Length: 464
View 1 (cartoon, rainbow, N blue to C red):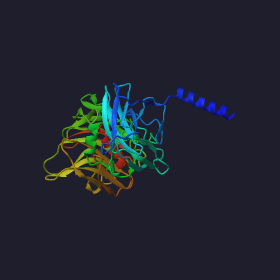
View 2: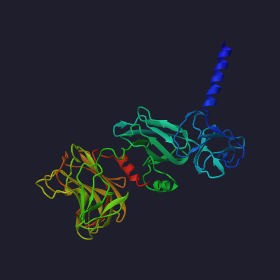
View 3: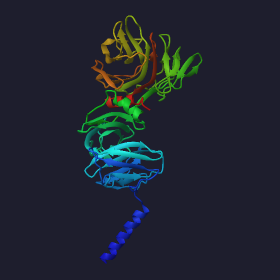
View 4: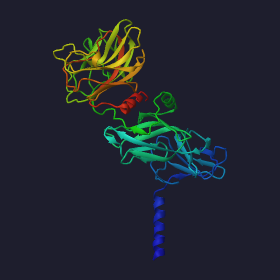
């Protein structure tokens, strides 16, 4: 009876694997229309019995790795094992971009990306792998259940109840990492660039939006700026559309009599009108161009944009073209300007401030409305100077106690202010209405104070 049961189980297992084929395992012969390679160690010696895994570059892990055995039913995965001379080869059916992950029995690794068009002959050197651990958090606390993976490989880990993620073995080099949010309605899926060094030192750049094409050009641009971090704690950013109260993209600028008109993409405020300004190329689509004090945009009905708002943020992309060359100035980019003190309540402004002989800076101003105007008593001035003729991303936040201003993803400054509450104001919103020349795009008001992760995520969005 025991032998009959054993035979039945073996037959069932055989039928299972016939019905559900695993990955394609190639031989080690030299083949035409193939990717073939030789794996060596750091001394140039061949590495036998190394596992070679080839996948389409942008695919996410679809397998469960158990030591050196890989269980999968995705026929886009190709596996081979190097022979005594360190040789391997596979024959993919399509001309695509592929990731090649190689791991020796003692966990030395190599990872590279290739574009396959006909035949490729490769030589790879496996180097010591390195561990990587991090803790994930978000606005609501720890980020449990986030999935962190290396695209084009089987390498993936999930954050535990404390938000911790760890990898025992990662290859040296620079490559993209995908983070899938456990709460995609509030927190964004993101990509990061991870650089793993020979001594376990890890640096990362990001977060980029999950659809960003992190090709070699983007990697060079990104990793050359001073946004790299060695921190082992990463915060998940808010979804770009989350808690957006009003959004003026200016893509719909159109003639309305002698004026131009534009709308709030969230339809919370009335239509905006432009006096004398014009449409120009923006960061995305159109932007609003204003040449001097006679040209400005205005939204006369604030609707429900600020209803029940305990804290908020204001974002804008701006390009300052010409500033005054004499005197001291405080020039509004966008804000509620209290020209009538009998009606003014809470007021704000993103502005440019400066004086003759000094470098101009961006500023964020708030008022409780009692003075009826915005002045220097409650403003945050950025430490970064205004670069004339260059796009700058501004994000100003108010959390009920202090105001902060970020410029191009970097904290420009924070300051505790005297005001303790922000109530809706009947004051209109002006774009410009000052004697200087600038372009403004993607102005947004959010009902939540953004933090560093949110701001950096939005700054990296300039990469498509």
